[in-house]
Image (cartoon, rainbow, N blue to C red; front, side, top):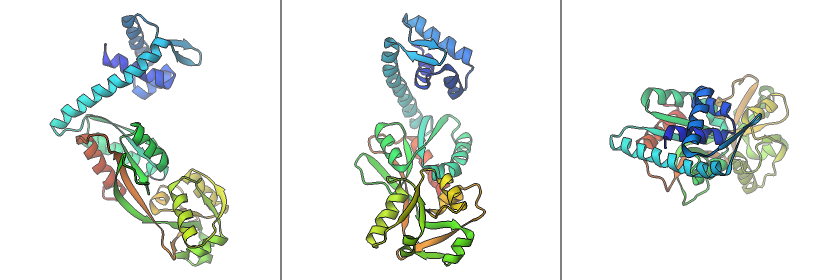
Length: 298
């Protein structure tokens, strides 16, 4: 069985469409269709039913998809192990990034791969810290950046960066509040735009407020950091974010920030990986590159 044909079939099955799979693989759709058809001829089975909306799997197709993923993973692992013997990063690695950081470091990380690891492939997925920790456990991602992770025997974490949480608001309003610092107790009278419960910044704020006896006034719950900043900019409330989250904002005008004090609240960014997976050259070099970019050393 040709591994390339199997890879093409798995992509089409997972995407549910020849056109989306062709875009993902970077190949022409007619060539992709021919390879999948050749696999069906070799196996003497119809694997996919084509229709106007895309494709659906037949029963043999579902069986091959389950086996095919395992086969491709084993082939990739063998390639990575052989490459690791030469200390050369090869194969593919999937990195999970929180939205607050993805916009800032995805492009330089890809450019670093092109320069320093030309035989390796990088895939980047975005998700909140809780989701990335789940994906590490299921094997969907190999490395992830997570904020304030809960201890888990299944995940190994390495602190990368510690940042203060800042109160963010319209510039004129922040001047009225006192400028560079705002006591936590003052937040009780401010409408806040925060992510939903479960997001690391929200958990951190709620925990510290409860310990200080402060009841937060949550005006709006929004998961997207850019949308939170848009709402703040338009006067719908204040946000509590780190400096790295703010640096990803493409329109910083009109906003100002102040350190939350009494107490100061620190958010810890960690590099996380599965405790079950073996480290290889690709894993180690990627972890090093991500750490450098997060610390602004690259």
